[in-house]
Each structure stands twice: as structure tokens, then as C-alpha cells.
Image (cartoon, rainbow over all chains, first blue to last red; front, side, top):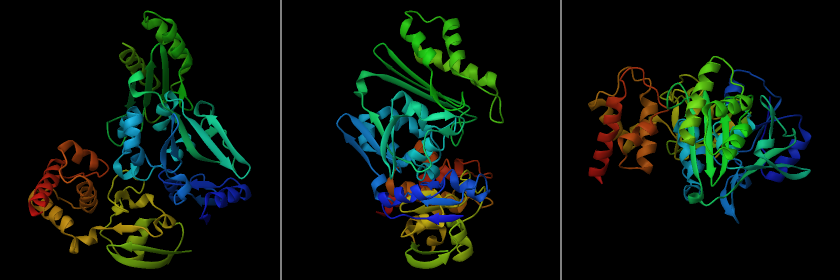
Amino acid sequence: MKFHKPQTLPECLCLLGKLKDPWLLAGGTDINVQIRHQLNVKEDVVFINHLPELNFIKKEENSLIIGATATIKDISGSELIKKECPFLADSLADFASPLISNLATIAGNIANSSPTADTVPLLLVLEAALVLSSCRGHRTIALKDFYTSYKHNVRQTDEMITSIIIPLLPPDSYTAHYVKIGSRRALTIAKAALALLKRQDEFRIAAGSLSEYPKRLKNVEEYLQNSKKIVKKHLFAALDEDVYPISDFRSEAAYRLQVTRNYLLKFTR
Amino acid sequence: MIELKFTVNSEEVAITVAENLRLLDILRDELHLTGTKEGCAVGECGACTVILNGEAVCSCMVLACQVQDAVIETIENCDTDPVLQILQQAFLECGAVQCGFCTPGMLLSAKALLLRNPAPTEAEIKKALEGNLCRCTGYIQITEAVKQAARELAESK
């Protein structure tokens, strides 16, 4: 394994263009475990955490822009985010222990592409976009279009996520809920996660751990938008079309579905 | 191999190590600071907690390259640091130590908390220590010890 530490972002992007599918290492809370246990090990590791161009949280016009290596702690503790998007700051309290939140980065959580990534359902209902950069240039894509299948996404091997853009809504113009269901409250990996944002008649709902990647529940959203009165049977039928819960070492498909139904009812009541 | 410079417990260290070493390995095996313990090695137990640039982190989650120019505090700083000493005494008085394996990590997470929040609530103490697992005490004594240390630190100012 070869370790690289580029000193600037342009140098880093140039390096990514030359290497064959390297690991990008920021906080390291996912990758360091894989290195330790020799899982899916790649030939090259590129450190990016020290690059000053990637570590920022700012507001530009009507958006929050979060640099790739902002940690979960940076975000949940940011006065700007607490003011402009309290839903995001508050919801990240359940992310992990402080020992991990102090290291783990937002772009790492997204790029790792786990079905159970904690930040992703939140960012999906906030309609976040990702800036992907390479030595060829930059492109911006909606987070909802980022994942393609289990653990796969549209990032090319010479690209990296450099920032996350969150279009801002006035905090008093919507209500939002988030729940992460695990075996316990702290230090848990979600068996299911549900984020819901309601703004006038618009519903935005996203789920984690219920499909091969976190995604918006389009049928549920459409049903809620078009129904004056919520009929459980119809709501659950829409949910069945959106999610594909599985049974694995963490939970049972039936439990995942039931708990999601319950929270969906609770949040829409 | 990588040449590293960083500060541990106010002493500057210059060392050449393999790039795939974790901060935990560097502390224990290269610098012989064995107060930092290895538990799960996957970031879940907190036994290897150190303070890195002011924040409590799992040292098993940090690779050599990530500590270049960093400021690190380990439990060995207890020899001279008054906050760690007050915490250590409070842990002893409250019966917050049984086997002691988690205690170095507990003290460092508690110190990181008290540095930014000198008067934490019980909920804030629990949140700050949630990444440090203890299989002996049941946590009540540990929470009490941090409260006692916070009171003593406030009085000593």
C-alpha cells in the first residue's frame, strides 16, 4: 500500500488523475478499520484531511456550502448551521460518539455509500447537491442521483467530493423530523432511519437502511401530497413500492418495515 | 516510512514510522506510552481515547500521516496536568474505577468535555462519555466523579 499526501487541492486532483482508483482518506473512521483488517484494500491511499481548501462551512447567497472534510462535530457545533438549518445540526446528535464525530467527515459518510449512512437521509430531504472535482473540472450533481446500487455511486475514480451544497429554506417555513432506529440510542448503527420535511403542501421523505442505498420515498411523497385524508392501507402500499427492507445480522425485514410504518404515521399525523 | 513531528504531553517528538501505523501503535510501541489501551480497535469502545488538537478521539482511528504537526495529550500527562489530577482523584473517591482498563480513556474524554464546558449537566456528561465503554462500574460513579471534578475545578479558580 502506498500513501500519498498532496499539499494543495490542485496537486491532489492531478494525483487522482494519475492513480488507479485510490482510497481518499479524510477522517479515516471507515477506511482505517478496513486497512487494519485488510478488507477491500486498495493500492494507493491519498490523504485529504489536511487540505485547507476542503475544510469550511459557509453561506453563499441562499445556500449553505460545507467543505468535504468538515467533521460531523464541526457541523453539529457550527453556529451558522444551528441558525440557518437547525434540523441538520440537531439531527446529527445521534450520529456516533463524540470520539468518532470529532473525526468523521460529511463527504466520507456520503462517499462510503453505505445504505445506513446517517447523514444521507437528512441531506436528501434538504435536497443537497455534491460538487465532484477532478483535474478535468468540476460538476455538480443532486445527491439523489449520486448512488447507483449497493455501495456504488457515480463518482469516477479521478474525482472527489469537494463540497456539499444545501439550498436554504427559512427555518420557520417547514417542519422536519428525523429518527434513527437502532438497538440502542448511543453508538448504534441504524436498523432503519427516516427523515421527513414538510413545507406547505410539499412532503420530502427519505429513508436509510431500507434499500440498497438511502433514497427519497417518491410514492409515499406523492400519496401524501395528493391525499386530503391519510388512509393507512394506501400509505403503507405506497411505502411498499419505495423500500426493500432485508433481514440481516442487524435486524429483520418485518421489523424494519413495521417501525418505518409507525414513524411515518407519527410524523404525518 | 514517514517522518513525523508532533507534540505529546507538551514534548516535541520527531520520529520515523511505518505509514500504516495507527496513533495508538505509535504511542504504545514507539513512544512506550502504554497508558493508552487497545480495546476493540474499531472505534467503538474508547479505551484508546487521547486528546488530539483539543478534541477527544479514538487513537485506533488515526493513521500516522494524520498526526503530522498535531498536539496530542495522553493519560501520562496526569503527572503534571491539574485537570487530569483532579479528575483522577474524583474517580478514586467516587469508586469510578474497578478494573481500570477504560479509565485512561474516560479521564481524557472527561477532560475534553470540561475544557469546553466547565459546568456540564448530567446529560452533557453522558453524551461526552458515550463513546467510552465501562464493563465494571455501571457508569453512575463515573458520572458522579465528573460532576465532582467539575465542582472542584470551579472552586479552585
